Length: 394
Image (cartoon, rainbow, N blue to C red):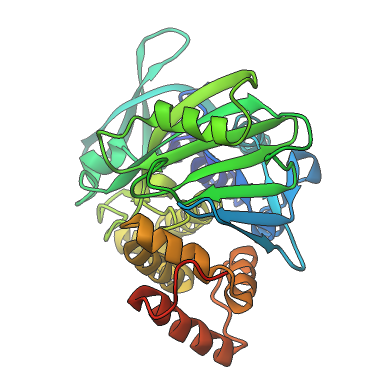
């Protein structure tokens, strides 16, 4: 008999959520975490995540009520977040909380490094290197959930296309927050669309209570991430702020076409590519990915049908495919040059854009209640892209 029903490889938001859900539904589950790794992340979470995944208020280090878009020219557009807020978390604390919660729910926690999956006629075994002893260990299981990040070893070895996922390299520095006043506002997220900071993505300054996350991302290998972040810190009045830690990692930009191997492996989170294009938002989608992977695994364990592992991607895309498609179109349209970025920030002046953007962000779905607003946004979008509207218009 297998030691376990499911082994989850990875203990980030996706892996911890999958492990917790499976444990609460009565399955024998373990999750393998390397321990000590902190993913570079602005730390933004929407109200829907807080509600759906029962996140306690004391994990929020800030509640953001304004988003500032900054154009290459330095022009700024402040967008108030009406009827809600953006919650901010510190990934070091947040991820540890999710792992502890999964363990308390009944999941077994393993600390080590995934090496490979081996199979015999009785099924798969996960081989990993135990952190404490350095020894190779083997655990027999019925299914494996790969939630081991954008460069997922599980995905590359087990799932077709898992070795060809496009990604942005993100880098940020957690710094001591400056005193109130000056360019920094502890209740505002700054998003910097400037080719001097990132030629193909964006930079950010996100408050974290006593700290702040300052960083950027790019797909271009010749971009100096640390130099760009230093320039961003200088522009934000943070050059002399104490640096708490520095982190860098890949962030995927496109969901994989397939999330399972048709046999005994299904992917979740960054390993499946579920980070939103344009915004780079990943925590909410990772946790949803963990939940649907757990649902698919539970179905497969019940029916014995390997094809039920396809449920993970099907359930995720049923709700989020259109949002990902729209955000990918925005990134392709506006991130290609500073002139396009200038026009994008100009478009953000529009009240319809502001309201529908944050309604969609907070609720994690496209807002369908106001079709005329969507029509107006479409026409304005075409006008900005075609140059009919001046990028300098305020």
